[in-house]
Image (cartoon, rainbow, N blue to C red):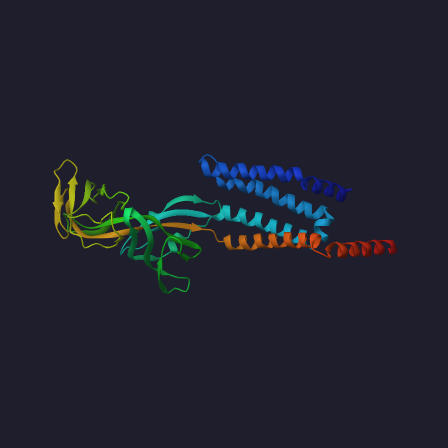
Amino acid sequence: MYESAMIRTAKKLASLRLTLVGMLMLAVLAVLGVRSDAVSIDMTTIPLVLLAMNLVAALMTNRTLRTQAGLLVFHVGLLMVFGLIGLSVLTRFDGHVEVAQGAGFEPAAVTTTANGWLHDNRLDGIEFYQSDIRVDYLPRLVRQETRSTVEYRGADGAMHRATIGDKVGFEVDGYRFLATFNKGFALLLHWQDDTGAEAIGAVNFLSFPRHDWNQVTTWTTPAGQEVELEIDFDEPYFNDDSAWTLKATDVPYRVNVTPTDRATVAVREGDAVRVDGGTLRVADLRLWMGYRIDYLPFLPWMLVAAMLAIAGLAIHFASRYLPGAATARTLTDAEGGAHAARA
């Protein structure tokens, strides 16, 4: 009695109607999760669990799915796909960060855009440094190749050097870093307060050349005063009618420094300006590069599972429609009938 009740439950779970409901739920939650902040993409794991249960129940109750090799492989592959998608959703990470030339990666500067419920954040253990940046442009600001050189510590503990771009990144501890179209100038500033304490850091300006007309930003000094900074090149940085490369520049420039409630002071590289609580000196003008960070460790396995499902489907259709397949199937059915008669 217990076994028959379990079988009846499994047959209900194996219903094609339940399959349709699960697929619709998955589609709706996926669209809402991408377009609305009110719905988490993590909720797609609910229909994925439902579809996985539906598949397991179908394999348990439908003898055809278990005895035909192609269908068995297809459904097992599909079950793996559902499981791996669910794991990817729950453990995923997506974010972006800006790193200036000569500076190192700072986990605290990462802006997180997606973080799975089960993601174990290990960004604090990642070490990489930004080196040379070059981005080629054709006339009319047509962006070409991006070449960003980085040095990072690999799993072997050694430092590695790589030049990456829009399509080729580098991976550390499962996190993949990929250069984006977002990049610009970073002003290296040296601060010294009235007690003699010193600090040095980079201030990133708006993306260049997208905002070439507006290279202005605000920065708050360690003493708490807000200062407006503007980069003003002595001559145009690029000619819109010819090819050019965005790189560390030799074009002379000045920085217009405007402390709160004070007049603007124009300073050159190496010059200093007095502000509340200390002195601010322009040390250097560099570039910064924007990176996208993602963590999807199960993605390669999803491809393997998808290929397995496709192979199973190919085996199934080949066994049904290739020449000689029908004869082989008839002989198999006849052997099965004779075996049943003897039994």
